[in-house]
Amino acid sequence: MRFIQEDVMKLIHRLRAYFRAIDSYSATELLPFIPSDAILSNLASASPDNPASAATPVLACTAQTFRPMPAPSGLEFVVLSQYTSLPDVQEGLDTNAWGFDPAAPAATEADAEAFRAQLITNRAFTAKLNKQPVAAGMFTPPIDGIAELVGMTTLAPYRRRGIAAALTSEIVRVAFAHQVDTVILQTNNPVAYRVYQRIGFLPIARLVSRHRD
Image (cartoon, rainbow, N blue to C red):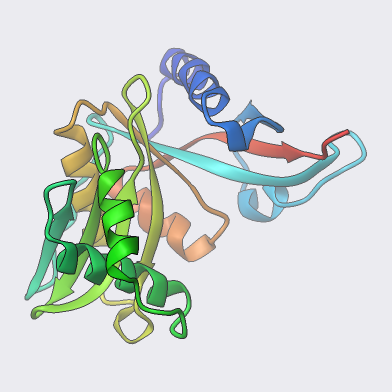
């Protein structure tokens, strides 16, 4: 499955506006995706003609490409918003932090309160397997119908069980219900890249971070 060329150009135009609206991307350039059998290695390298410090594939999912994934037995999702209880928010923050660093400190009530206050148009998620928190992720506040999937992680003992795919699918489903028409993500991880493609994320562009003058 691919986006048709006309849709690609329209989406890239929208994505450029999206990334311009985010301060942290002020030193980047969004370039159209170039098909390649070695896309991940090619995009991560710089050349004299392309003095990039990093280049990451940007994948996009729309209602037309989305393929919902089944959840493993016993898996449920907690959607975090500004109305969620602080203990549930703390649990989500801890799950996310420990998925990246098992030694990370636990979230405080103040951490949870500050994070919860930001969950207005965006949502965070905790995946729980048989009531045990095992994975987390979120989508960012939408800008002109575009939201970004970020912070996706699964606790080490629960990886390769289909949990990440099911959580991603649930996040996309909820995002589409919150006036989002396109969910994007960035990854240089070959395993994650293939998982996201199964859900309906297709390569649309390359985000190139350039050296500042």
